[in-house]
Image 1 (tube, rainbow, N blue to C red):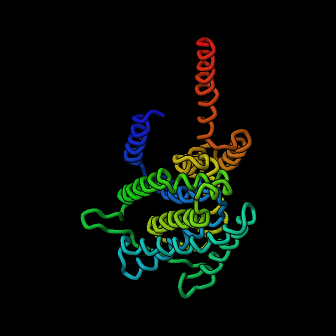
Image 2 (cartoon, rainbow, N blue to C red; image 1 turned 60 degrees about the horizontal axis):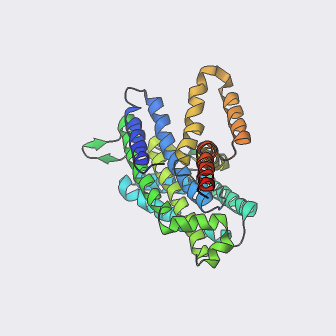
Image 3 (cartoon, rainbow, N blue to C red; image 1 turned 90 degrees about the horizontal axis):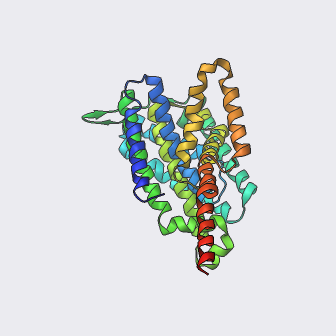
Length: 326
């Protein structure tokens, strides 16, 4: 993609995100805010899975950690700006600890470890009623107020979420374009070769888990004031699998993949509601068909088209031109 085309595309997408909710009802704005928040969670999992190649089924548990810490501190009178960083710090530290099993086990064994962690967090949230409210959850979580700008209404909170998402996306862009990002990709492609080239695979593996977990915590710190009510069932294994589906559908290892995957998983069912009670069946069939015929994800379709119709003809023409010169 040409150097000027990518920034232009990003600018157009941001303008569309700003304009899209204007004039819409509260429910549509809520759905769009949910898409942004889950895109952040999917960005974190994409770093762990798509760039570093480490399987994790615990992203919802980090959303839970970020959500509950932010909610508890907000209910105690803390502002969101001061409560959110503590949630992110907790997720970063727990992500480092969870990353240690990834140094010894790989593939589906690592998936089982993260699955067990997700289950552990769910059980703690459900059983420690003195802290988390148990199955009754936490109610009345306040939305942040920034003086002249209050997020109590749906539209201002959406724009607040959009601003946080843009900042998180820019930070992730810096990470994947940095030497760390190249090390993540090397770890995914061939850990042995990466280590032979001087990459500290232990540190990079732990860092991938920690940063990805922190993004999950950021998503949780936003979902708590959005819904203003959280309970353990909102962060179960099914939610982790849903975020994993977003990464796979959007194409793992691509920067825009989480946004596209979250749009399919969150927004597509809403567009299919005109079919009545069949919308979930149609949605499930569409996802299955896509995963069968395009396992590399939606962005992978463009990569395949570019290779088939652009890259190969250019390479063939270069070979023919070289043959004529001889």
